[in-house]
Length: 240
Ligand code: ATP
Image 1 (cartoon, rainbow, N blue to C red):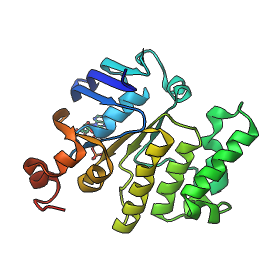
Image 2 (cartoon, rainbow, N blue to C red):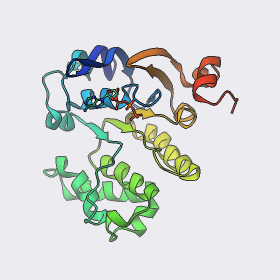
Image 3 (cartoon, rainbow, N blue to C red):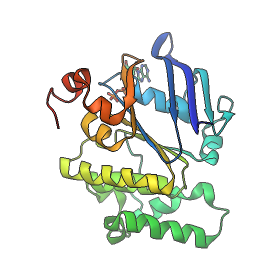
């Protein structure tokens, strides 16, 4: 049984179809990426899976159809989205943003939440150093770390990341992607949507290419990295 299985998913804005007939699968503890140009429908797909917009077709998580569930219920099942905009509470501290990330687990023991603070601070030592700093004063890279850390505080089973590299310097992108790669050891399934095809394919196990709302290619990430069409269109025609 696949962890996340999506079959023939369509989503539209009014009469305009944004994504058509999308089918993908993810196993727990693996990283799957969807790469594609601006406007291909990547964010739309994540929004639909998160229950933020209606869709046709099937999406099941741990064997149960997701269709009827609202966002809150999906969060309860362990599905978490880190949107492109990161959506931090800028006037609150790093620590308080992380506490809010654990909101869906507020009835669990304080010890388990403290344990997760320790885990997030060890993954992102920079957040520990800045625990008392307002989120709005963090650098772009630190904000992305906080968005990821806050998502991890919810103990996600499936973590959906919308363009985590957006606006970040290459050295920070490498750091963030290294942390994403390490999520495998926590048995989190990651669905990574990216325009930075090289960084995404170097990190993922499997990839899909989305163009104008449709999946046009898929395969193990190393195969896509070496595929002439992917190299030409998404990797600037060069080898790594
Ligand atoms: P980017 O990488 O630029 O974020 P994307 O692949 O995530 O692009 P989407 O944001 O999913 O693409 O957009 C897919 C298509 O749907 C685009 O043509 C876009 O203009 C359209 N679209 C997105 N949001 C809306 C909306 N709220 N209303 C109408 N059309 C929309």
